[in-house]
Length: 200
Image 1 (cartoon, rainbow, N blue to C red):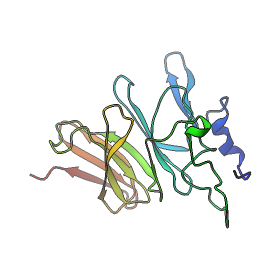
Image 2 (cartoon, rainbow, N blue to C red):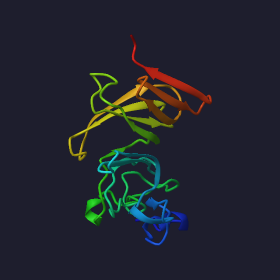
Image 3 (cartoon, helix red, strand yellow):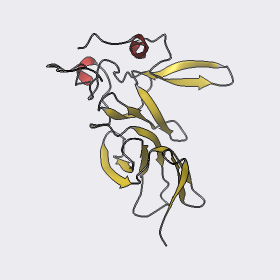
Image 4 (cartoon, rainbow, N blue to C red):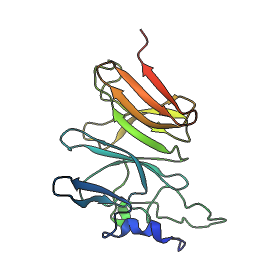
């Protein structure tokens, strides 16, 4: 694979560095530890109340954006394995990054997007939002201009629904207000707040 790695990227595989890690922080003891490693740009995180299910959505290089199921002490492969390619590598005859995570003892993503959509955030909707959208998640994107509706299997080992919903703007963040059944969207391109609700 490519030898053109820079120092800031290679720290993702250095256990002594906080770069490329999901951190587990104890605010009372004022300590932290690496929960998982080998991440590139994790802009969105989700955890249920018990921490039993944790998801990250990550920007890959040129392609290879990922949805990952986070497991304590697992390594997700960056900057060694990715389904994307490094920027600036021209006329290559071989991949610049390994195309299998598992062959290198890394954890495979639940799903990988090529071309890139730049996932930015992920939220879970409760089942009161709509009887048609049960156990659904929403993911914002930056370069894709869509919300993406997601559904996973029971054990969060497989993505079974991946539906784009056109918005036409970069979606930086999402908030779900359960009481009002309203989804707020931070729209970056215009600096606006979008509001998504059920049509009566």
